[in-house]
Structures are given as structure tokens and as C-alpha cells.
Length: 196
Image (cartoon, rainbow, N blue to C red; front, side):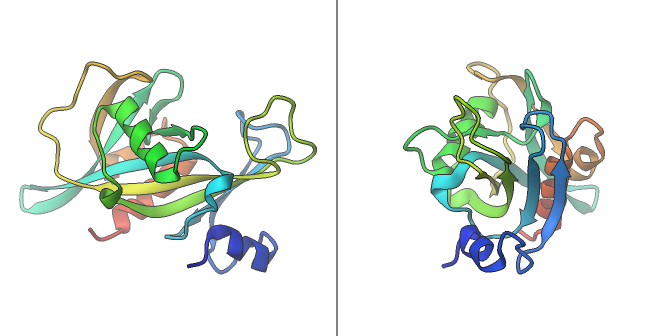
């Protein structure tokens, strides 16, 4: 099975076979001149180059004669409402990172069987590797998954280590939030359009 890096190598980082869903520069949390390209794909980036993983838990509910998709979000202390996820620890698999981060930020335990790749971000940082940086350089990746499951009756409120709460929101409403990042918005649109 080909990974994202195989396509990057073949396409000289153009990735036209997968298709760029969004391209971002001047990102506040990246060094000046960096670029983030977002791809919607079930391809997975090379694990050694993945720095972060995210999992959006999606639930369907029947409401007033229609089926609506809901997603679970974290209300992060620094970044606001977002798809749960974060930095991969040394020796951790990408899926295990998404599962651990989801639990730390929402209190909901996912399994690998629930996770399906939905996209990835390729980050390019120009110039030499910044001193003290723990991330792969000059390219690193973030993996995005959708997790399907049963609508939780109760969300845990105690023991969340990286956020001050969780929220379940209709996907259509979440996508329209101004506080959601452009990357999260594109991923959510892809998840919303995917069949269960």
C-alpha cells in the first residue's frame, strides 16, 4: 500500500494524484515562510514523519424525520473549539496518538477499529531545522481520522487534562463557526460528506 510519502516522491511534493484541499501560509504557530498543504485522502503519511494526530468522533442521530451528523469537540484551554488531537509521543504509533489525545481531551476512549483516515496535512518549514525543534524537518505531517461510534449518553467531566470541557455539536453548525480553524473546517466538511 502506498503512503503519502510515496506520492510526494513521485510527484515531487506536488501531490496532484491526491489533490490539495487547502494550502496555508503565514501560520502563527509555524516559523516564517512555512507552508501547510491539506489533503483529503485515505492515504496515511509515513509514521516517522507524523508529528500530530487528530480524531473527530462522528455520531448519527435521527431527529424529526431526518438523520443529522454530530461531532465531538474539545474546548481547548489555548486553541478554543477544535477536533481533539495533539503531538505524538516518542515510540507511539499515529493511531495510538489519536486515541490517547482524544481520551485526554474528551474522556472518550476510542479503538483502532473505529478510526478511518480522512486526510493529512503536510507541513514544510524552510531553512535549517530550528534549534531545539522536536519535529521532523523540513517536512512533517499531521494525520486526521474520523471515528464512528455510538452517541454518548454522558460525557466525562472529570480528569480532562488539556481542556476545560467537551461539546457535541451538529456538523453543519460546527462548520459554520468562525472560531473553528480553516483546516478543521475542511476536514469536517469531508467527514460530513462521507457515508458511515
